[in-house]
Image 1 (cartoon, helix red, strand yellow):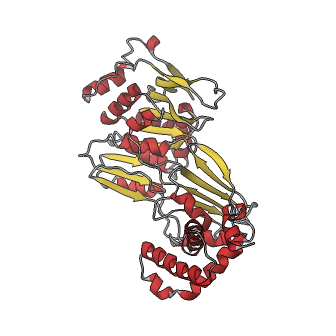
Image 2 (image 1 turned 120 degrees about the horizontal axis):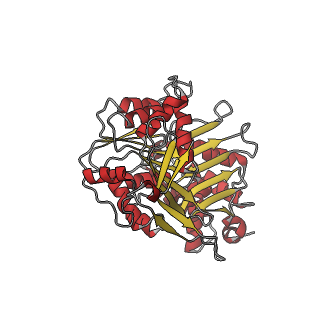
Image 3 (image 1 turned 90 degrees about the vertical axis):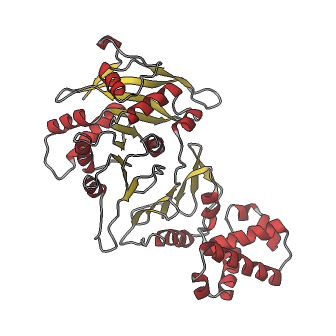
Length: 445
């Protein structure tokens, strides 16, 4: 098969067959003609430009003659292989791809628009996949091998990376790259159907009035995106401390301190947990604390901060409903090294949490706020939630879409009074409940 045919063949486009040998051959020739010491002194952009120029000379010298498109395709493939992440490089540059999932060398999936699809791509071998993984983790001074078969890290460009290799993974090396979420405003989320305008006004009032808000949802429901949008409503004059496992929040206020946890080094030392950062943040005179996700004993410190003068704090938790979020917070807080009875944790949550915003990803990939629930219980009472807004979904239509409508309920008098004292109006679509019968309340364990 000619070089021209190989470049344009389906096998080349899918990264299959002898194409891997072709790219490897030109990569070897490229490495023979460059000075690695000189290359290391160049910036990434200069390095890529230099490699493309040298490879262009090699192709011109050794032939055969290629069209402009064919030549560009070959140069891109070889340079991506030599410098970047090979066949993953174009996926990282595709703004529509929100997640890349590599399940061994033969199966590559991506998420676009909330839907997962398999691509006709593959790595030439398991060794090539491992080389790509090692290149990724080396950028964050980590290593992956049999003694350290799992890595969770954030790339300098912001993507969140998780790697797990054999013997823990039976399907070969598995690589998951989660793209840095674009910052959306609540107004933009209305355009995407994630909420409606009355809910925007209510959420804006709750943030401005310093309600403690928990954003709850399953994996991939958009918790970080919503948390970022809500954080954007915090007044510019306040001192905000953000605490995350992988720094994704992009607050625009002038007085923001960003903290990120740190995993242990190769010797198992130097670990800094979310809990360490939450405890330390309390000594930094924060007006607001924003925790990317509570998933362990740090939830106790977060709850104590919320109930001892740090009103208006925000956090996310992994849960499937507003009731589940309360139970999960109580369970996570019990994982602290401080022995506290479950009853006392229950009281702490009643004291600390004001609002739960529940997110759901539907079968069509749409992410929506499905409930805004206000915690109305006190002290040792059973959790009592009052629904302020919810999304009523309809069955999926033949075109694969999920439609529905947002329903609004009157706000409890206590919530309305607190909004009023903070100078925030009650949105007209909600109104104020004049009796307990008008509230959409329910008890949760």
